Length: 404
Image (cartoon, rainbow, N blue to C red; front, side, top):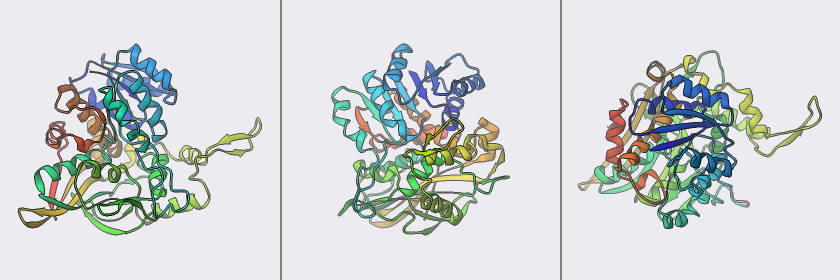
């Protein structure tokens, strides 16, 4: 397997550090718009299978050309969701397998944003599913941690733990703190704003997909391994759009443990219009400049990839499932916890980006050895869960299950 990794930020860099320990691939070309980032990622692993390149992720032809020039058969997208579609199409035009960790962006319903779906996450990609399938190509979408591992947990629950599933709810929480900062998100603020301020999507079998108000249905969820109770609220996330396509469940939700202060900050950004992506004109030393308010917010905050030495605590990704097994009610929480102290000591990557990065590497290895195969636009639920969970454990990062 020859891989083109596009994006050498926190997650992309963690991908290189995890993959460097595995023998399943022949080469990994690490490409970024900023050549210093790709060169730094490659220099750190100091391994001949890795090569640094520069590419504009929004330039479909340039990305396809890079795939061909290095004879790469897989494109792994580690950029933010704005670049999903050009990278998705570049992979298809070059005849490469495509893997991402987030899906094409949504657009709220123009008239009833908090009741009906407009363009849903992944709709643009699934619109091309038939063409991918006809050509025998594979696009594995949503293969990070959430979405990704959370979806694998949903498939595992359906295959081995339940006869009938009433509800699948992804629940994400952490007790991470960052020394020296009152507000410092541990993941991309651009992506966090996108998923937290868009209308959350809920799935119910008798209604299909519908939306609700941001931060709705608050609940306190008790997270394992010492994290404890965290208030979680509905946010927009890919699992709700993916899980029902392959797993039978009467209801699917995603709730994020944000905390009152974080929610308040996001609401303030929205109130001031600083969550907007459309450029506005501001004065500059050389005349008016067009800038995106959300990009300004991101530029004013520390890069999450650089915060590892200041972070303390654990992050938990997991899938709560309620249903029936052998005629009796059952409720479980399948989860994966990463301690920041461990990930920094072992890989030099902070916990949130490491947890996101390990899952696509596991998926690439399963594709390389044939344990996972298919064609079309497929989510993690379309593949058997057990090989993934076993290999994740073999990577030294076991998952857990708690009977509720």
